[in-house]
Length: 211
Image (tube, rainbow, N blue to C red; front, side, top):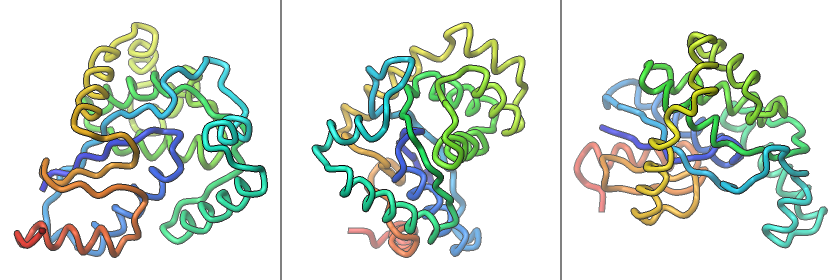
């Protein structure tokens, strides 16, 4: 079974969705062989290099008052906790194009899932700047990748065309929000669903009974 996970590094529901999906896969106990691949989606492709205050950004984007944003953060914190992900305090949101380029390279190197985890934990857990190339190179090292090669990828601009092409592909497929989980190229599950939703869907698809 092939699972395509379309997401952005600074998307909190993508962190919830990934950890939830992985819990579901754990419950299946390996009975369904799975190939999990990550694909880029930028929530804010025009985000400036210096980033933006996250409260101002979300307030303007969704028209929410600070009190509602605080309630949303608490709801996210609880959902994250339920699937084993810890959200910290995040004050800024960053451009993620370089992070996606690095993830593309990590896929070639066979360490994409490890880097995805490192990026999500760095930003959502520790509020690190995931547009900073030194931060990205360090996280690549933590994911088992060669730090010097990571720096070369970042400085050279490699994988930029691949990331843009993938983003266009998923947009043309109708993906306009993340996380989007596409199973065997046919079945779409959107949002940070609970583990039982993913588990049930995976079992039904594996049995050939999905609607």
